[in-house]
Every structure is written in C-alpha cells, then in structure tokens.
Image 1 (cartoon, rainbow, N blue to C red):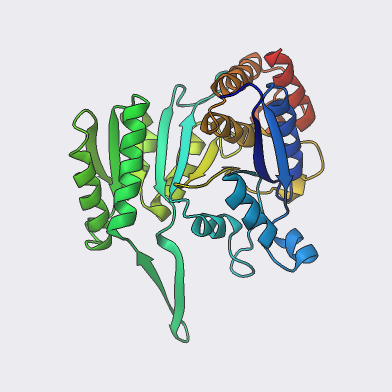
Image 2 (spheres, rainbow, N blue to C red):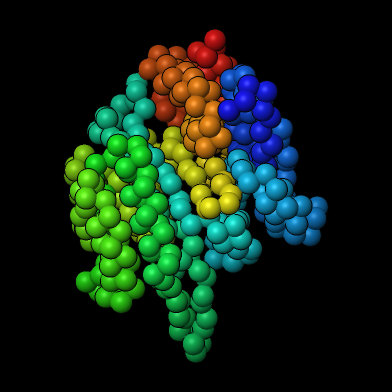
Length: 337
C-alpha cells in the first residue's frame, strides 16, 4: 500500500444513532494516518423525503465506483413499508458472503471469556429472496431458494478464509432432516468443497441443536457455515455471548464490492443524546481497513480499542461505563497516540 494513497469510500451514516457513531468512527479512522475521501449519502426514510427514493441512484453509482462502503444502522419498518436497505444492497451488488467475527473483548464480564468464532452466512438466497405471495385469503406462501452455485461459493469462501487465517474447523449448520432438498443441496455443496481442504476438520450440526450447543459450550466451534436465515439468527445469538450487537462487526462481501456495517439497530430512543456505543461500527471499520490492506492502521485501532476496554475508564453505559459516544472516541484516539 502506497503511503500517499487516498481511499475513496462510500459513507452511509444511517439514521437514529447512526450519524453519532459514524462521526466517532471517522474521527478515529482519521487519527490512524490513513487517508480517506468520504462520499456521504442518505438511505431509507430520510433519503425518500429528499430524493423520492429509499436508495438514491447516486448511492448505487458511488458504491459501484468506489467498491467499498461503510454503513451505519438504517431503520427497517416491520411488517410493511420499504424493503430492508441491507438486503437490497446485498442483492444489487451480489454481496454473497456475510462475514461476522465474534470475539470477546477484554475487560468485559462474560460467561464465555475468550470466545472467538467466525460466522459465514450466505447472503443472497434462502428465505431472504423475498418471494412471498398470498395463495388465498389468510394463507401466505414464502419460497426458499437454494442453488448449487450459491451454496458452493459461500462454502468455498469459508474454507478459503479458514485456510488463510489458520482456522482449523468448519461446521455446516442445517435442517436437512426436514428440508431434504434445499438444505440437502447446501450440505452436498459444502461436502464437495470440504474434500478439497483435508487440512480443515469438517462437521455438520442441525440448526436447533447448534443454538443449544452454542449456549452450553461455544468453544466446541470455530467457523460456522450457514444459509441466510440460519446465519442471521445464529450471528445474533453469538453476539449475545460476548455482550451484544453493539460490540460485533459485520461485512458484506462480493467479488466486486464490499460493504462494512454495524449490525445493530438504529436505536432512535437514544439518538442525539451522546449515549450510543460506536464499538460495532468501529470494529466493522477495522475489517474495512484490513480489506483495504491498511494492516498497520487496523492493528493500531484494534490495540487501542482493546486497551480502552481493558482499562474500563471510558466505556459507554451499555457495557457498564458512564462515558458518552464522543468521550469513548476520545479515549480510543488517546490510546492510539
């Protein structure tokens, strides 16, 4: 990476607490010495009020041009309204891999200190294709789509990552005892890919049993490979093992583009009050730095973040502290100096 390279990044601050945590993260990123040019865009309800579109055409164009985006939380209506911005962007740019590392931060009380899991979730198929219709009044049908292509490429992503980063074990999580065709296809594809990686231990667990096993003993797992819906649920469950969604990062990765995002909600009840914890978005930004080959900057931020959590002097209220969003960012910046 050239010392004078400037990274052009599409920035979606989001709504609710999004702008606050985004601003905190940008301050920290600027403090690394890496150079950024941010292209800011609204999405969701706020974008619709101004542009008449939930995702403005200019935002699509920016992501396609820059190939990297950092995204804060955007509110998704429940049971109606516009489609999820996250799901729409994943489909638009074929971001087939949802990547969520779940690692316990030092200094926090946890039933499972030392948890270190990788969640690899297929991001474009399954129930999330959104193919639903009302068969007759009072009866709704939702179609689950699983393909050989989609299942094979997410399995290969998981095994490639595991080999590159020294992970030793992958479990495919499924319900093929009931959904024999769809989940059965997912498993067959995973098994085929596993044969190419004899150095990585491969196993399979039922989704319901996996949820129980994670709560009882998460250390039996290393990397989890899941279909879309299962991955959505399990990644949140695993976040709960280390303190919640406010602490863990998320990345949506494809062959052309990548979007790094906080996976928590927009928390409108605390918006504008300097209470939000920027850790999840900051950890997502660390993933972005690694994606951009800014390894030294990523390591520096990670070390500073862990130093702040170990000291426990400048943590936000959700993790037992009394600091505000800006004070937390100040502490991370100070730890980087």
